[in-house]
Structures are given as C-alpha cells and as structure tokens.
Amino acid sequence: MPLSPASGIGRFYAKSAKIIRFVRLGCTNRPFYHIVVMERRKNQHQPVIEQVGSFDPLPNAHNERLVALNTERIRFWLGKGAHLSTPAAELLGIAGLLPIHPRTYMTAWRNRKTAAEAEKAETSA
Image 1: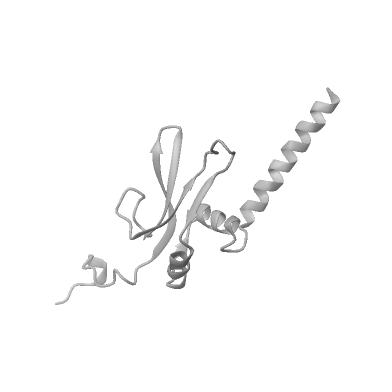
Image 2: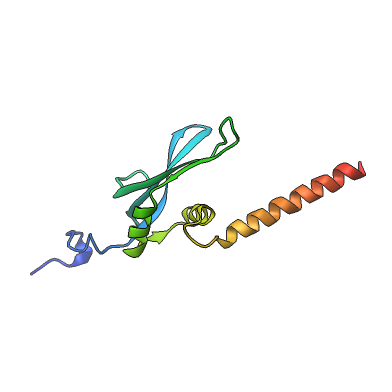
C-alpha cells in the first residue's frame, strides 16, 4: 500500500506552499534581515530554499536603511505561486516591485498625524 502525501514522503515537496519572508539575524538591539523563500509551515530558523535579498532596518551614518533585492528571483518565485508575508509585501511595495501595501499608507498617515500634533503642542507651549 503506498503512503499518502500527508505522511511526509516528500513526493509533493516541489508543489507545496512557499512564502517570501524575513529571517532575523544580527545581534541584540542590532537586527538584520535576510529576505528568503522557504516552506510556509517552517519557522525562520530552519533551512531556506533561497535567499533573495537583505534588509538593514537601522539607519547608517547617512541616515539610509539599506535594502538589496534580487528582483529577478523574486518575480520568479511570485510567478511560481509563492506567498508574501506582510512585512515583505510592504518592503517590496516601497521598493516599487509591487503596489504599495495599505499598511504603508496607514503608517505614513499616523506618522504625519503625530508630527502635526507635536508641532501644534510645541507652538502652543
């Protein structure tokens, strides 16, 4: 009797769900992310299929956040049906590879609102 695919025989490994997401590296208080393609059900510390970019969220001396993307491979995996995590979708939207994610608009709106309130409190004080 043949084993079912649910038994983990690996027959459907190539067709299983993939996801493009961040894997956190770096030290305490100094995060660094690799943008990777991996199996959807695996956690970030398990082996990845392919690394397609990197992201340094902390500003450098020139107040820049560094991002490196292999857009060719990202398009390949998206064409193969890979899913995107929300942070990865936001970053790819800001980079211009995808439409801008709605959460990016909301974050910008909140930042503008906070800045306006701070300016209003500063002028009234």
